[in-house]
Length: 247
Image 1 (cartoon, rainbow, N blue to C red):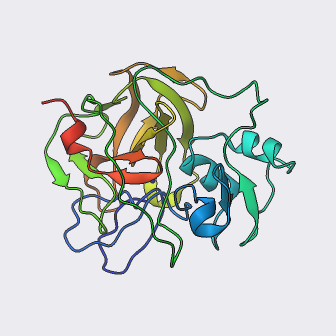
Image 2: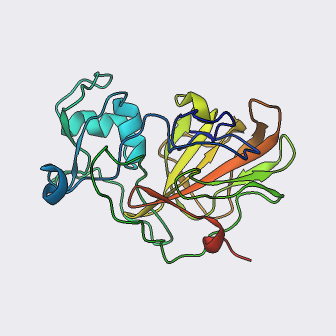
């Protein structure tokens, strides 16, 4: 997911994770791909993705809730292979793949980014689930379709950031600069959650986590504001987290 940026016209990563933004333009995880295209709209079969400029294997994997090494294996590529615009990659495991992460009962799935230009994408359908709050604090930024891809919850540096639902960590690192230290959790084949601009990460890739488990410590954004950017993706498209969070 990129952290939301405060300067108009700025664009970045799983949406730019930036706090307190009033006139911001943001998108999902920086450089991340659009949701899985269909043969009827793009000529690419379901389960495959056509690479866009700026995509990397790591970002594509994160967008679809997969591990980069698995994408490389499914596409007979070296683990750190560069991908080229127009290249078609398998982003879903083959039927014979035994290492696929089993569907979790609680929540879940892949993430994604803006739709490819000129391709009509249906509105995302919010997953039917209730999530636990990843942190307690004021809402510094709300979800605005087309302008933001998540919410920002304020707090204190070092405060615990918790998993909104049970699942498996598919990304934990700092490779998507606009989000700072970022955790992405896959819950099932439909939904993923992302937690950006953390301080210290408490989980690593492939960890199984339970709802409410601490996964990070709250950090600060580029303006020194403490908080976490929280995003929910359903079938690769951002949805408003607030209606899904328990009251």
